[in-house]
Image (cartoon, rainbow, N blue to C red; front, side, top):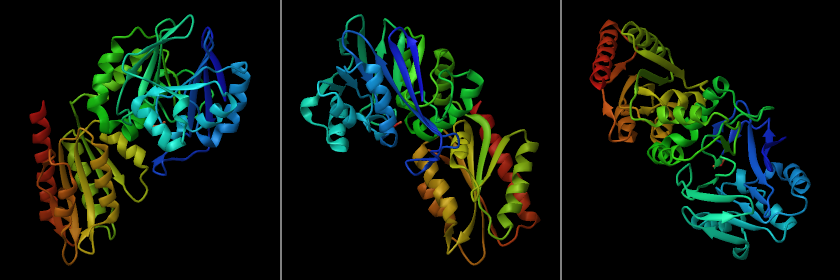
Length: 389
Ligand code: FEO
């Protein structure tokens, strides 16, 4: 737990969850995470977000101490329980406190936490609330990463409280990021959580760049005392341009796909195309998601299982579909023994805007003619990437 006065009477409360290794029972958290709340002492005392229910007891201990027994408002940016989950405990301990949230947030809090309607004040886009020396301003920023999300700006403090946006899953003893350390963690977080919504995020970046900000205060991981660094990183990740990179998630049962992927990665390297192979039997899906942030092309490697793709390859294809990276092209390297419909099953699942490059599907172990086809696939990818420039 870190409690830090980031501005006069503005406190960051960072609750570390060092041991958490999965989020939503899906997203790997190799470095744990934090749940960040913020507390502003003014004529009206304001709590911004709370902590995951697994940390409520610890969180309430510090809130009772820091608040001096008075909370007027609890700003709820986002109804997901890792930030809202301790709201019921705060409401119970502070009977005069009211939740401030957007209209969609109010509905979700009522559904997810059974909050009483008379404890909620709903705000609209660009509403303001004066709390004494400060006037807090609210902006609706849907789809980072739920539809109800709002953010709060304190112009007097030049602090923007962004909830999930600009977060990192990184348990830490520091409050502020040092840029080189946060980049990789922030990119992983973007890839896993924010990437499906990059078109929305671009619009939010336009809004945020119009504000005078000294500190970006997210609700996971490190705060940003150099807002430009993280905003520029998000500009890069959300932009439409892709890099001369190929991501190759693959699985091999009897060595055929292993052999072809090994040959193919060398063929790409010879053409000065960056390649990142991921053996799906051992892959951290967060690393795979990160690789997809910039890559121009996806090539799936799969053997046939009962006539279709290997289930691990199917999982990777589904992950690709729901993460919606800006990848432009896809292809398949496959092998089968007695028959396969793998290509159709995979291409049917891929988003329709992806350009399919002629795949290489081999019956059995690869022969010289199949390696020649892999050379041709590498040439086709090179030509497609050149056309993008
Ligand atoms: Fe960190 Fe969407 O909750």
